[in-house]
Image (cartoon, rainbow, N blue to C red):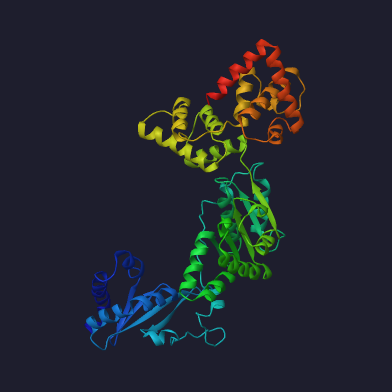
Length: 477
């Protein structure tokens, strides 16, 4: 009787032996998560997290387990597994008991199945469609919500489409929704916002966020373990599937093939698919055409580089969340200096706070300049159109809103032309982009402005001095 009660100590003794016979990483991965449940009639019951976990243990460590259990319990000692799955309909866990098997038995395990009280029939939790009753962790970061996503001209279409999808997953024309854009522009944030909103509106829906790399690794493991069908069936049960960085499927033919079938099943059954990529479908290389054509079924929405106002709004949101106040000139300097990457902008902001805190210095413009120089040291920093406009407006004492307006006043037109001139020579932006930043002008207007500035530099000495002084000021950023 005493021995039956001491199952925790018996399992601890087993672990001591196992620890000496496996690597520390294997022990941490495959044995630490196991919990002893009970001991009855020389049968030790241990709880494992999943069927896959049980199969791996039986496949790789069955001999070691048998030896250790028999060492503690004698030659009649046996091991029984308890696999806990949560039933979302009645929120009560049920247990599947599997005795220790040999290699032949492993292929067709005998499982004592629970009775489904609703139907009176046998409920097999290993039949994958039944996994709809299992809680699937969504892998969503609660910080990536719509409330924390700053909307601007750069992302308005993508955000609006994402919000529409989150209100009616699978029921809009935006299926799939492909969000694409450069590094650090908020693709992952927006994609996870959709998942979080779906879960908030419909807690019963199964939402899963997964990176393309993790999807590929899972698929490779499924092939190794000969359970590809289980892998496919698992993904086919998801109500809203979010795949991040789908461009990494390029060149992986088998992964693309299995995702193609998963995609078809989900789409045909009205399930929502959200994808992110660093480029639109037409620019994806190494992808099967049949898959690319499906990416185009719904909506492809791009995230562009945020404008100055959006960058300032992002920093203000961070400041408010952190309870921090920065001088206006420091805030603007950060927003003007880091233009192409939101992640880098937030990193600079955090670095500035850290510099101030660790060195016990007040946050000043001078400290911000020092930090920015170190933060982007060894990086060729491109001057932004916004920064050029600010320097030009400060030089001529003009409000920046006036420079971007439609006014034809002589002094404003000249300042606008100078800004266009520097933007063409100092940035990689297209003529159309430069014109859009300077009051919605077209590329022909930008070309005319550059010719005008060049002509004035050749004929007007004072004007040439303006350009020379401005060039130095812009270079000091």
